[in-house]
Amino acid sequence: WLDDAACAVEIIHAYSLVHDDLPAMDDDDLRRGRPTTHRAFDEATAILAGDALQCLAFELLSRPVAGEGPTPAQKMQQVRTLSRACGSWGMAGGQAMDLAASAGRIDEAHLETIHRKKTGALISAAVRLAADLALDEDVPAYQHLDRFAAAMGLVFQIRDDILDITADTATLGKRQGADLAHDKATYPVLLGLDGAQRRGLELHQRAMSELVSFGSAAEPLRTLADELLNRHC
Image (cartoon, rainbow, N blue to C red; front, side, top):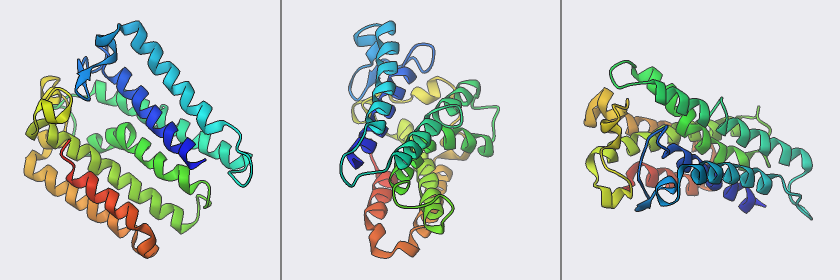
C-alpha cells in the first residue's frame, strides 16, 4: 500500500510535466530526451493524457486495502494531502504564479513562495503521505518531517535552476537554457550562480537539522537529500 502512494506521487508528477510542456505554458519540445507529449502526438492528446494521469493517481491512492493496511480515515487523509499539494494551494497555484512572474520584477521571497508551491508542495506530499499513516499532524515528529521536505523542495528547485545554466541538453534530457529563453525568474538570475549554490547548501543544512531527533532511522532521507543536492540531471 505504500507503493500506491509512491505511484500516485510519480503519476501526478508525470501529469504536471505533460501539461507544463504545452505551448500555453512552457512550450517545450523535449522531455527526458524524447519529444514532449504534444509534439509526439498533439495538444489535445497531451491535455487528455494529463487529465487521465491525474485521475489515475487518485484512483490508486483511494483504492481499498485488505488486511492490516491503512484505515479508510487514513486513506482519506492521504487523498486530502495529495489534492492540496497539486491544487491551487500547491503545484497549480505555483505554476500560475510562475507564469505571471518575470525575472526583472520579483524578489527572492516571492520566488521562494512560487517554488514552495510549484515544486516543494509535491515533494512535501511525498513525505506527508507516509507520515499520514503513522503520525498526527500536530506531533513534533510530523512537523520535523514536514520542514525537512519543504527545505528539500527548494534545494531541488535551486539545483534545477543551476543545471539549466551549467548542464547540456543531452545530460538534462530537456532543452538547456529554457528558463533564460523564457525570461523566467530563477535563483541564479536573482542571486548569481555562487549565491544560488550557497542558498542550496544553507537549505540542505536546515533540512538535515530537522532529522537529528530521528537518529539512524532517518539515514535513507539523508542519503536522498544528498542526492538531490548533488544531482547532475
